[in-house]
Image (tube, rainbow, N blue to C red; front, side, top):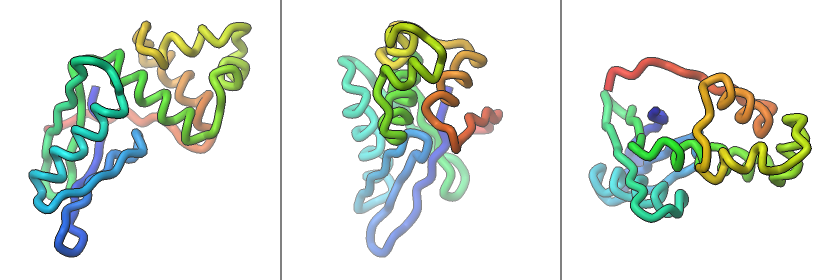
Length: 138
């Protein structure tokens, strides 16, 4: 699984963003910007040994991904929940669960959801966004 992003010039600097993770960074060079986005996401994942790979594409397009799918999925869900201003209990309630653990196990990376389940979890934390899956050429 990879997430789309873009890297672009802003004055003398290069900006880079991965919108689905709500993460932005910058660098003096394009290479620096790509290194900085990897560092930012790795810091946010806050998991020992977690490594983010950056896959530059054509033009401004890029993708980021990791071999640690549980940590990457956990970060996606946590960032989406935080952006929505929801607690774990509120998300569990939206899912119709009686325990916060029904959601928290995914956000903590203890379980990796199926595509269908990921869509349900993402919908519970983002009422105005949708999860779109596309095939990558990178």
